[in-house]
Image 1 (cartoon, helix red, strand yellow):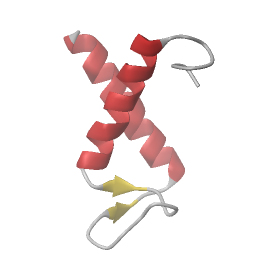
Image 2 (image 1 turned 120 degrees about the vertical axis):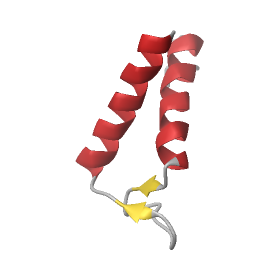
Image 3 (image 1 turned 45 degrees about the vertical axis):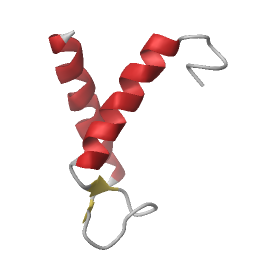
Image 4 (image 1 turned 135 degrees about the vertical axis):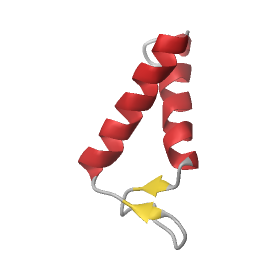
Length: 60
């Protein structure tokens, strides 16, 4: 949505990168959980993505 509807590609990339980082840590919500990953509640997942985004912004 940010990339295509709002024409905010940089912001979209930052969020997508944060999500990829959290997924790479093995966290999954129930709808995408698979064996070998850690199932978390939506709040924990969103907090992890927000933390990854904050960390990423501090480095930028």
